[in-house]
Length: 316
Image (cartoon, rainbow, N blue to C red; front, side, top):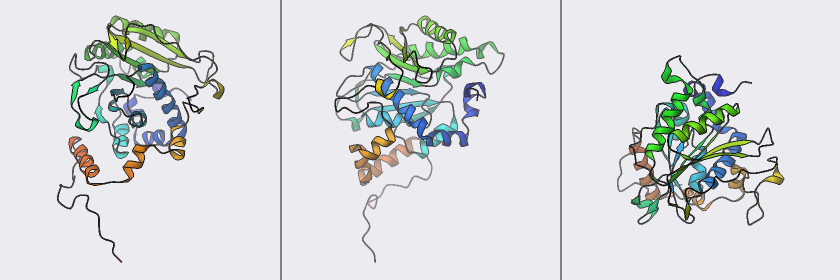
């Protein structure tokens, strides 16, 4: 079977049927979880405090769920209306934007930085200084295909628009990690060259380079120099993982468990505290969820009243 990006544009390929099948596929969930954890590792976020992360090509929010479990807040952009609709049905916590990254990111220049520092609590959403790490999973390869013969649809032009606007939207210093599936070495060279022309530092990271099945390519991009999560942003590009990508080559955590294990299986065996808390739907939780729906423009959200969240009496 040919690669998805060779069959149709993403907004057409990921229709309602494909979007739901992709989200429900356990293998897709496992791969998405593995690469999300790896991207977070390469972002080198400040330890012990939440960060505000931009997910480029967020799809139905599979990566966003990982970010939530790790205690982060996220915003996602995607070109597929069907994927974003599935994300809304799944009630993901992140804010969602419909956007074609090949036309550039629609953020004000100089808006985002590298991580987030909270003045008070996470729920207050009061930021001392807005900073945004960026990561993307399996999206860049869609920009290598020209849908029309117009010069603005050529892969170099679309990549240039994406990297130029991404660089402009980030403050100094910051970091972006972008995973993609290149079909040739020339595509890797094209991506890294255009990113450097846009102003980025950093380079290419290849995990499991000798494995055809487990090989993963990441762009780890830096903006400027200075302190970022306790280190210098101009440091050397992290090394890729070695081996064949088999179970014996995976990273092992302090408890002796596989770090990149299947997320759904982990939730079943050891539910997170956040998942447990969500089962108790009190008034505060209901009001927060209703306010989120209103911000997203969802219609028919019930009005708040003294009966909101009130428990019903047991009836026989």
